[in-house]
Image (cartoon, rainbow, N blue to C red; front, side, top):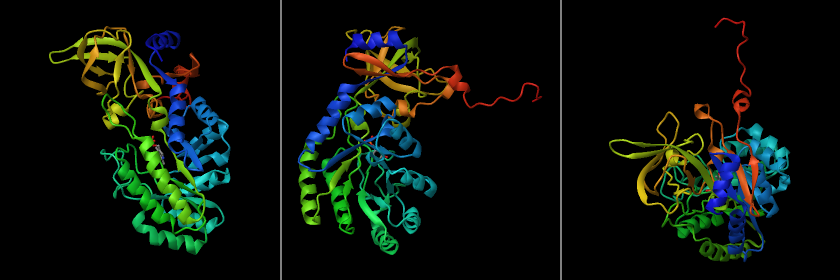
Length: 405
Ligand SMILES: *Cc1c(COP(=O)(O)O)cnc(C)c1O
């Protein structure tokens, strides 16, 4: 997408604005399937919590993707977008037995991540095909916020509890069809991932009716210049070989599943904002934009560094800026960042705004959530209108006017 297209979109749809490039989503999807082309049965389930707009779900469905969901509401959105229930996986954490039963009744593959629910579910529904989420306790990535495989994590059934797990399965005679792991966002080191995979293969040998192994996700994409990204091609080569060998050993062609979110949509997204004010203080130059952590919280929540471009003045002389939001709260997007000279009214673009950006947006400060546009075949399609005052009032119940407060 070119700057002139992006500028035109902000004129047409206003700012702030989320824009997603369909081609980039497609090329990432194809890159992943190609890397694993040696695996006979491969399945990609898009982790929709990254970006859950129905149009994005439809786009991925057209490419052949399944869905990975973490709540019954995500399941409903997936069904609404036209996915067959068999194409939907449900990998919740800490949800009630009732919700799991409800999702199972919709024909969706459930994935259980604790022994208590496993025992209860297995006792009540021994014939339902169930997947088990294992925690291999592997530290992937550096940030404890996003490493879910380590020992203190709330995710998955600890690999050290395997004997208890196997006992529950034997006692209830439940039908285990899949083993799953998701070690966390941001796999930097393929060897770490392969190590975790070995733990999964070992665990899998305890179950005789498996149909698939689900390796979750955590593929890292570059956020800023010189960032390392997961070498998908290398991972594809090594894991495919190992997976195929395991299938031979197991005596059955299993399906290999991945459930990427960030990898598929992160780089496809840009968040376009307008600069409201340039404020020079004794120590810094602030560029204050018409957005805040109500629209994009990753920098404040995870310390993520989204690359920022000044698309109104891309060739301008670079100067140092702190880019901040308009929320009454510290909401710093970038500190002392070198950006081509910014004037009030310029449009800035945050890159990597496809994953965990809009889907984490809120109405804090009673601001509206922005619109979303899908860029496809050289055209911008509005896929979500920006909110209006009615949206803020929706579901609010004022006191009757006559009542004295
Ligand atoms: C969030 C999540 C994913 C996707 O993770 P990414 O880092 O966005 O690829 C996959 N599987 C499960 C179970 C998740 O919770």
